[in-house]
Image (cartoon, rainbow over all chains, first blue to last red; front, side):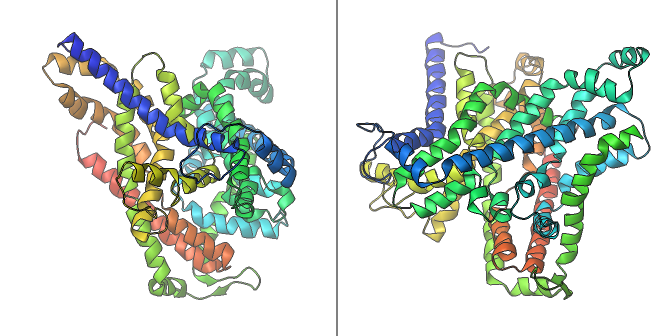
Length: 278
Length: 263
């Protein structure tokens, strides 16, 4: 695009790449360091000089943390809460987005603006009352208390509504001529067409539920119901002196999210795209 | 009729866990309530108590100072988005690297950065080795430094997210605009300032409405679930909401007034 000395341009491009590379090291380095620490056989994470390549590397910390903490239990809890949470959010959004996009009925616009407008409400105040509500429903210290309050996602409903809007009217008309009822039309024609949006929502909700921490900490009382994030916090208080154990626990907690993100990163970015369309 | 059936689950959940708690939570700010005995109406007493509460002012002050991270974060994210908005080998991996902190649990982030900031941690080690510090800096213990140290972690964790938002915004801008400006003799900086940034404004508006006021937030949580002062916590939440919404509106107006007006 620009004219100029080609040699100079090469140098500039190389410098830019170097800058981007340094930044990438900055964002990923803490993970590398955490991993290295989890493989060390002696010492603590705060040692002079810092150890980046443990010799010899060992898996003893993983075995140790697995033996001392009910990590398998925490892991199962997290998988359960995340799985049910995602499923509920996707189903609720897939249902609610449909009439908002493709049906005419009294109150549609009011309902839509009320849903979207709820983002402007003081949500933090709501959290206090949610605890009281769950207490009255005798649901404190249940898994449902963790995922139910976030099961209806405004973002999800909006995302699915946008997806339904893009389906051409001809497809709907053809299905109606073939005699499909409203529920069959939705289940057999519309849902498969918004599958990419459903996948995007599921993936975005994955990291939300998997990493959720403050709310489970408030509504869960018994340690055997803790998800990993809360368990890890507990662990870091319990083993403050054994940073290698904590590092191993942190790696175990982080690996699934990194794996899901790297495998499906296209969907992550697309989710933000759709969310950004005003 | 079917339409309402489709909407029913979402509306029941939203009514129970979003609308009801926000409306009654706001009302609760006028009551004294400790969960055990029934709520007692106290009028504006919670707000009067707040004015006299030293910790409220500290938390509010820190929240407002902390908000300084928002423009810094946005600026860095825009620059980064402009930088990675190209098709080059490995650019996808670089973007993924910047996004990694976004998907990481805040608990893990907290653990790692507490170690990095430790007196004997890596950051102090490097600074001492390079002779940039005479003794270890107490990153998280000294009041003057701690807030900035935490702000840096916010920057580190949020950069990738906002980069992605701006990247999407950049991809929506037809390349013809910048080319036309270049033909008209606009330099690179002028093209950025007068063409690209104004066109990015919808994305900036989107990002600027999400300010983080954690210090107030945690004080509220502590009052609600630590001390069981539910009414007082609700009052804190109301003030927090007013501050947040007020600052969002201010940033909206600021962005709308500075620059072009075709939005």
